[in-house]
Image (cartoon, rainbow, N blue to C red):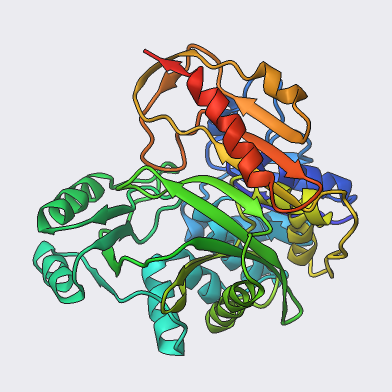
Amino acid sequence: MAHLLMVESWVGSMSRLLPRAIREGGHEFTFLTRDLHHYLRAAPEGAAHPLLGARHVITADTNDTDTLLPEIERLHAVLRFDGVITSCDYYLPTVARIAGRLGLPGSTPQAVEDACRKDATRRVLADAGVPGPRFAVHEEWADVAGAAREIGYPLVVKPVDLCAGMYVRRVDDEEQLAAAVRVLADFTVNARGQRREPAVLIEELLDGPEVSVETVSHAGAVHVVGVTDKSIGGAPAFIETGHMFPAALPTADTGAAAETALAALKALGLTEGVVAHTEIKLTTAGPRVVEVNPRPAGNRITELVRHVTGIDLAAAFVEVSLGCEPDLRRGDTGLRSAAIGFLVPETSGTLHQLDGGRLRDVPGVLEVLLAEPGKQVKAAGSNNEYLGHVMAGDAEGLGARDHVEALLGELRSGLVIR
């Protein structure tokens, strides 16, 4: 039995999938957090969350890494950790530094930091010749506006250190750019109490569909598990409205996306102890890297992969974090594709009606999770405002997405927000 240190967590699906994978692997974990009540507030009554099943729950300031590291060393002397892990993007660099300090498995702190900072990712990949959009990074408005004119509109404005699509916006002119920059400048502290960098990343708007490449890195080798497609809505925001695994692509496009992701991971140095989710745009000029995320995919993509291939990416994440070879053998699951669609609110108010009980009995449906009436609803500006999701599989071919879209259409017809 191995003992992992889990440093913080998301409160979504991975907060349940990762502890489950640890337990099913025959291991145990200690949970470390700066704010215990963050998880108690977020967990529905009786729901599993990262506190459940933990051998120990310890509080410490996880936002002050320099102070935290000596404390972790003292804990390690008593509790003996075999690996360190997190599902929360904001603590991936902290976990990498802890692993480096304790001599535990994982990628180097620099590699993880570069992947988590969107501006650093752009610079590293550009220096390595990995294709991406034209970009610029500035703090002062005059520099941002000048770079925008040089790159040319339309553009994408991004924070360098947020996730879930927060404050990522398309802008078509300088007026829209100024508005996006002002809104971003007002958001100075993220949801975990970490002060944000004031830098603004602007990028050329890429054409074409977007996919993600799911990979597992161990012992210097990177294994491609597959390619997932993505649908986007909510313009001018970029909200993920659904996914299907595997992506319905020609073999050449699948291969090109995978090769581009592998090049990005190699350039960043993410070839050891990482389950990664690399987003790629299949543009008319060829694949271009959007982002490299050095952790398993969110939005239940790991479950789509498991339903189709039998490969458990959460379990693989646990094993590579312990320095062990992950089980990536494919099995016959009876499904050729699996898809998920999210119910994205377009208006704010109070959820009055959302009836999806019948969907659970529809053939092929794998999951239905919907918000309850009475919930306060905010018009979606990122991936954080979903009202629920529907997941379905197809045993015959690549029809899972069409099935899900039809079911979502039924849900939307009965959705009432007042």
